[in-house]
Image (cartoon, rainbow, N blue to C red; front, side, top):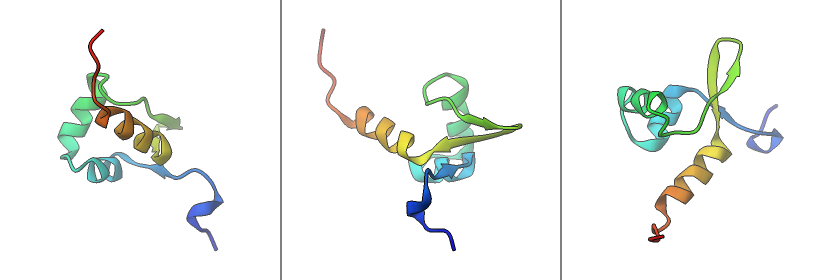
Length: 67
């Protein structure tokens, strides 16, 4: 039986859109515009590491400092 502690969790585009609480078309636009992390390709299928998404969200929520 598999558990979430067995290794990295890969999410498809629908699952990522749900996690980000955006529509699938909005998510596709983010990917196309380079505003989101690159997917991992498994053959022709695109997947994203859940840990990388959570890290991206954390960095996006940090206050921006002026340079």
